[in-house]
Image (cartoon, rainbow, N blue to C red; front, top):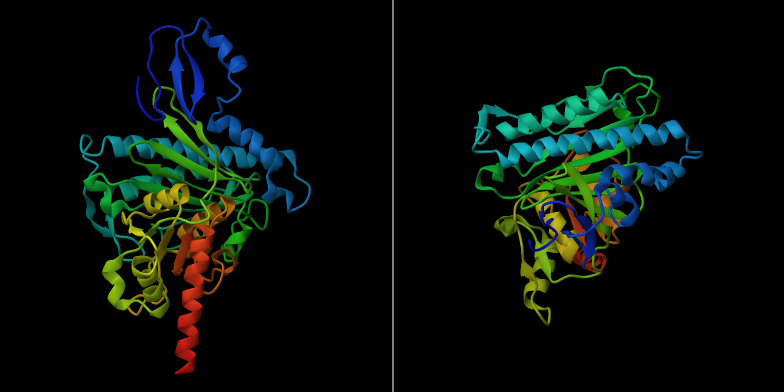
Length: 383
């Protein structure tokens, strides 16, 4: 028997049951043909996508939902899931397959050192989405310009993604991940950068896949947020977190305090407050990989911040394919995301690699950050 949500591996007959939100196999007299009949709670990512897109709130808001739109979104999300499985396999074989280390000194559009897996992940995402024939255009952290997909009459969507977030940590086995968001294309089969230069609230779907002690995909298609864990023996993502809700408040904060000398008054006041003026001080938890930090915050509550400061006034995170998808997920899970003055999803993107400050997490805690930013701004104006 294995702990947590892992599957027990038993010879012969087996069935799957839910125990405390996790899944394990127990002995049974049923054959494999009986599994679909007995187990209502056994949901794979494939079956979930097919069901969820039939009643997708984001699509419904656009008017009548056509069957081909449902099908195309299903195919697109399945392509992303396949890419994530491939990347997870590469992460697991990192040292064994000579996939660790830098990619020969190359840098991306932001001037950041590329790792070998950065390039592999980018190629896997790009090729998979292009071959799905459901995208008109792709935006990747690793490419300076928008990537125009092969022309297809089924191209209805634009996908934005960071193929491997936190890759600088990959060689020391820290959790890394992929982040993605999906927009509707302005015209069928035609890619236009203006399709993504708009507020994040216009997204159709968003998600991330974390490659760590388990491979976990978190996804929303405009409704509830759900988590799926990759079962290597099945080669399939299985639903393990049916309805993720971010707690209204938490006891941790996540920020790079090494930059505190550059912070403005709002961030200084908030961190000072949670460290010294709470009845019980908040604990600092910072991994340095956005996917891992946000995943913890989503499940346990608290805040994740990458503020603007005197060194980087616009912060370091990219608005389109990091801030927007994560904020979209956080809000659908009952949390909040702000830049200290306004809701992140209301910000209108003006450039595909635009950077923007962000604070996200438990709704009450993010509101507290906003309050300290407002107080600091008022004090500055009064001087």
